[in-house]
Length: 379
Ligand SMILES: Cc1ncc(COP(=O)(O)O)c(C=O)c1O
Image 1 (cartoon, helix red, strand yellow):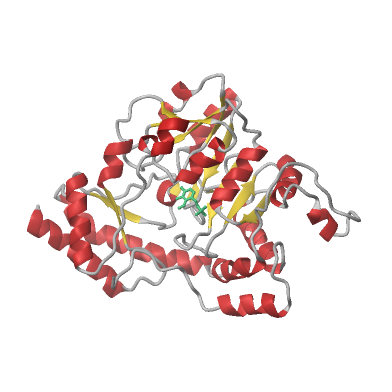
Image 2 (cartoon, helix red, strand yellow):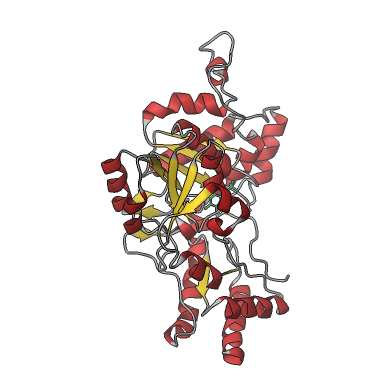
């Protein structure tokens, strides 16, 4: 395809930083660049501790361990999300309980959470779709009232805020993704954000295979040993180095993406005004990060037609999640509590347009022209 859906971010400094790790023979985890990335996240978000991980998937698994999720527990989340949001809890024996989304933001409907709570509920997992924050004040109030933990899936939320607070830093835990499809990348990677100091020591041990190796490296113990169940959740410093080159330029990357997002929005507004498509909605409490630009077609058939048309014109768009409750594993490990009024219907008509750092004006205009053309010719 001439215009791809995604191009991994690259700033130019990545190789220099990776070379430095290689030449210094410091390529395992928790080196200079991992520290720099953690500090950057802590400073940006205000959390007690950020720990770079091998993926957002693993950050969520760490959060599930720290939250003490166990067999028989229930965890509430939207079905319109990536498999990892659910897997992390299913791996611990919990049942995933889905509630419907809001059609305007595609985020969990905060007004449906309370009725899904039972004595078995332990946590709420809001997913900030497209880097647009969920209604966090309401969610935090519900969690407080029912003594539940909040684990924010902020895979797409780096640099985005809700009421001035960084996504991922509002709940008890937050999870970032630095996969190559995200605004800031290290190939595969993520981070666990910990709001409350009391979880930090255990998190450090869990991430280092359940050992106190970190204390050993700091010279605080003579030998390191097995302290509690854990796994290998820390990435190589070479990957961390790739990421740091981008975090250093986070504002520039964010502004570049916002420029594309705003141009899409403006240029496609006439189609929305004619009632042909719907455009994304950003609540006034939220500052988004242009992670994604999507439109909503009338229905599934129209969307599939548009995908075909764009592909025929060398442009690669993308649909998104197939709701988890309708998947093979979802049928076994989850329950949709309440009515699926919007989850399936809205997911079937959503289409993501190419969006990445350094998307050129001419390529973006080409996408816009072809979308408009499709509606002129076909609708
Ligand atoms: C909402 C959500 N959560 C979690 C993930 C998993 O991220 P990772 O690939 O870093 O494990 C993704 C990946 O796209 C995602 O969209």
